[in-house]
Image (cartoon, rainbow, N blue to C red; front, side):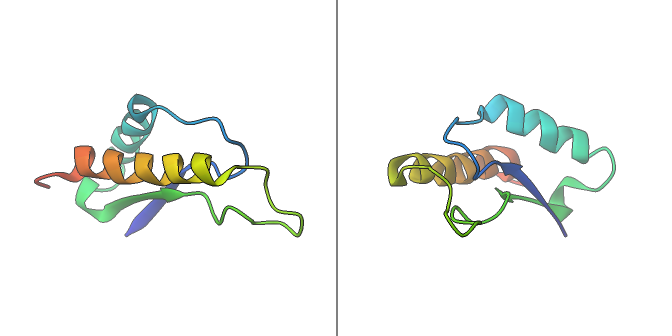
Length: 76
């Protein structure tokens, strides 16, 4: 398995599903899509002072990961 940490936990800007899907498609040129996974880059508090991302933004990012995964891997 290769886990693609494509969703940043460093800033609140939400990535687009189209951007994530394109990057997953690009990775699938090198490894089979059924051996890929999607995740945030790391934890939302990955430094001593944490990252200034509101809980609402964190939930949106996690929902984006789930929705993108369902779109990309549904039926794979």
